[in-house]
Length: 102
Image (cartoon, rainbow, N blue to C red):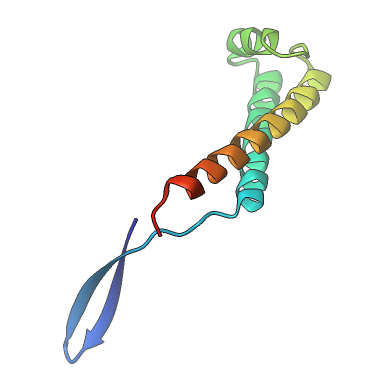
């Protein structure tokens, strides 16, 4: 990851590039991933239920889950995705922290 810092020196601008890697907080990354994943799938299901667009796609996607393509199913699928994205986010941050160099 590269950060570009701008500093004013006289009338010109000096650009310096700093290479840094930071460790990720596993729990914070997992919560952020869970919120993103759960809200995203819920909004997709609500949009599809309200407009009727992509209903075939969402019906097929709902067949891969424990719930059906309905309003109640939208909540259950969102909860399922929150749990799955939490686990995946935590594992990703954990592996990232293992493989980065200090």
